[in-house]
Image 1 (cartoon, rainbow, N blue to C red):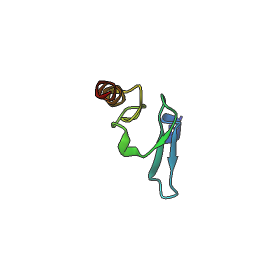
Image 2: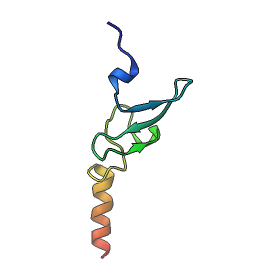
Image 3: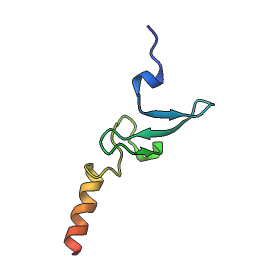
Length: 64
């Protein structure tokens, strides 16, 4: 049984040369560049329900 990269991570776009171009966030369902993800995470750093998203929402609410 062989395991390919697309079988392990079904939400990725791969370039012809084998480089990952985009990953789909499991929570907000948007395609983002790989640098927006931690090494083994399935949710992006900019996700509204993620750690940074909650921080940005909270700080925006405090400014109002």
